[in-house]
Length: 325
Image (tube, rainbow, N blue to C red):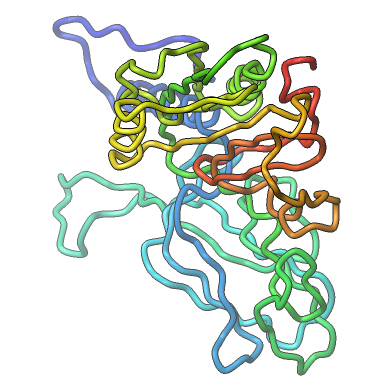
């Protein structure tokens, strides 16, 4: 990391060394910014697919990545890679490279500038190198004549199947601010049932990098348009007026997400006729929670209501949702 920069003055001689030092600092700062603010991994594209019909080749689609040094790796066109007769565990990696200084065209004159062109490399290695790289896929090859196929179960790829579990996808950096509202319906004996959304928002801000904020005890006759989601919390019986129903209808029609949470287990004969199902570790919902797209959860005992909207992790913890964690 350069600790000095060129200070230009009138009449100074701009030699090749001075020019190179000035631009080296710019490149270093750009790489540092990319690494610290966006991280390393796949920015977009670079999907890895098996050949159809299957053979020993795999294909990488165009895309962009950022390596551990903050260098931007661009693969502008599809690329095929043949594993040949190799056996064992292979790591398909993408690396950044640069060309030697050369003229832009073969007919450039002696006074034409030299250019360094950004390049990339794709290779399959048996061990991840210590040098900067971005992992695209893995495959455990068994048999020299075996063909490579897509994984039937991406979470548990078998031999000779593409393993895409270790791809680090950072995506295009974009931070949005989301506002959530907690609206209490009917008689309110306590606000602890509405604290879970605040806990969830705090965890998203700290762990998942999402800027999510909650307004609690929002009147239902407020303008709900600014809110990404409205959480209706009812502890006892309630009846919505025509105007309130119209407000909620217009909110949903405008693209808002509405979550109705009935916290009425302590009121005799007030629970609606329903049969809750326990969500165990083997439940199909649990297998996708870590990568689901937004979720709002209504916990009652060990049951939940899930609505997808934003990438996050979920916690199956009634105490957390009720504001006791």
